[in-house]
Image (cartoon, rainbow over all chains, first blue to last red; front, side, top):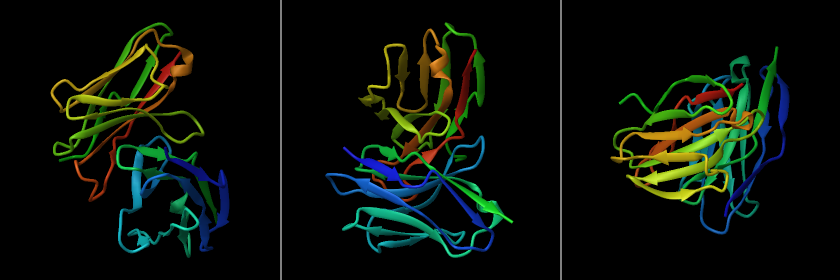
Length: 111
Length: 115
C-alpha cells in the first residue's frame, strides 16, 4: 500500500519569493509521483509528474520537483511565485492502479 | 476530445433521497476512477474500473454507494438514502492502459450538498 504525507497544511509566502512544498511518500513497490493543483471550486489539474528517467521534472509555469528515492521525497519548488499561484497543491503516488493523495498544502501568495 | 466530463456540477438533495452522478472519460482511456473529496482533505479513492469491470472498491464505499460502467465508456455513481456526511465533491478521473502522457485526467467534479 502507498501513503503520502504533505508536511505543511498552509504555506504563506510573499510574491516573487521562492517556495518549497514538501511531500514524502511510502511504498513497497516502484511508484509514479504527481503534483496536482486545485483552484477554488475546480477539479484537479496536473502540474507535473515523475514516471521514469530524469529525477528532476519541470512544469510549464516554472515549478519543478525532484524525485529522491533514498529520502522517499518529491518536494515541489518554485524560485519566484506569483499571486496567481495561490491554490491548493496535492502530492500523489501511484503504484500503477490508482492514485493516493496527500492532505494538500494551501499556498497563499501575498503582495 | 474535451477531457473528462462530469454531470451535474452541483447537486443539492434532501437527506434520504437518492442521487446519481455521471462521468464521461476520455474516449481512449480504459480506466476510470471515482474519488471523494471533503473540505480540507485530499481526494480519497472510492472505486475503479478497467473497461466495464469494477476491479477495486474502497472500504469507504458503503452499501449505499454503487458504481457502474456498463459498456466500458461512461460511468455512474449512485448514492442511496443520502446522509449529511455524504456532502462532498465527487471526482472522476480516467487514465490510459499504460500510464504515460498525462497519466490520470480529472473532471471538474460534482459537488453534493445533503440538507
